[in-house]
Image (cartoon, rainbow, N blue to C red; front, side, top):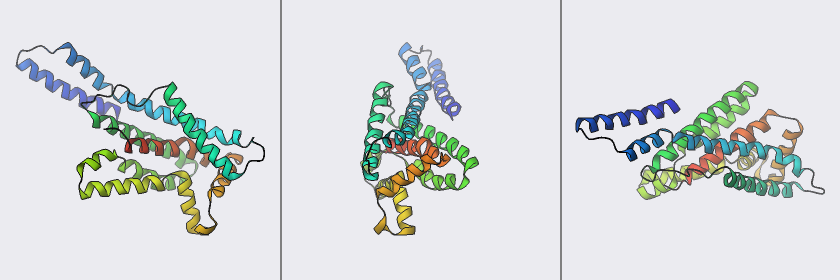
Length: 241
């Protein structure tokens, strides 16, 4: 993926160089610098993906500390988990780096498209590893995350288009994005099989605690693969183009 991207940039650069040579005009130093920066733009996307997956590692340890709180209810624990997850994500972004700090304003679409390709690559690796441990869990995750990743696209681009196709894509992105959120996915699945009347966030937190207590690989998959990839898809959807 990275090699293909660098090759495309280099190929375009070579074409421009040949055109410049044909006119016998030297390439300015500023253009050479922009070509070099463009060839390594994939590092920004890789850095964002790394930060989000590092955040997934932090989130995976939160239930252990939340369970140490005395007299806590499942609802309270779930709210604390959400707040700490959001706070830790903001802290990691502020300490390590913000997404696309050196994005080229003349090529706004390349950044989110490259981030999407790196996200799909990370998802493929995670699904491949999980399929060895628990194929059923990996398949369920693939049914939810693969469409989410493939449909991921900045909403602003579709809203600017103002066409039926673009608005349909916006609706699909919003619906799939909400359903793919882990708590929402759990509540929908449990509601389908057990009824929505008796389903609440307490069931989700009890399920998370049980996975943590059993040292389940599904827990690591949800916290370190599924949730980070979902966050990356949401980040792409709200990318400022």
